[in-house]
Length: 150
Image (cartoon, rainbow, N blue to C red; front, side, top):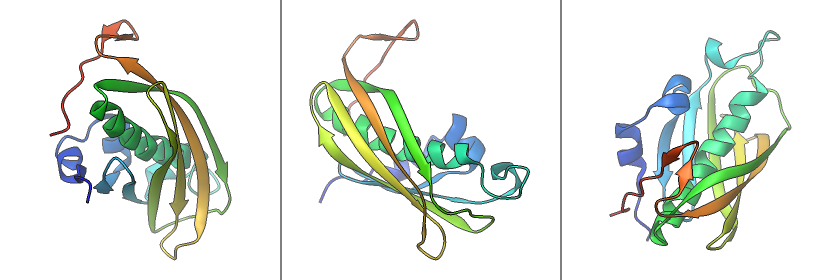
């Protein structure tokens, strides 16, 4: 069984995940699951969840999984592409995002994410492509620090 990093992630939430109320249920190198309770901040003017919430959830869970795997190689990752499709409108309840790898290599990874509503109906799906960077690489003008996973 792979090590679960969800407790560590939830203890240090910040940025988008904290602002959206995203909580990690499980986080391993092979699968990441997170949830959020839909509130007013998640809705667009028609009262349904904003598409950016789905895209952000897919990117968040995929990024965590890709990042955990990259650390096993002494690398880090940056996102190159996020393609999210919206399949079912949601107004309330809990959204659950699950991401699993489609392909993982030293240079690139592709992860697929699915967001479901409280009844298990698929609300959105997406794929995120990542580039693996070596230790000491600069991202947006700053050196990336790689922390060990254990």
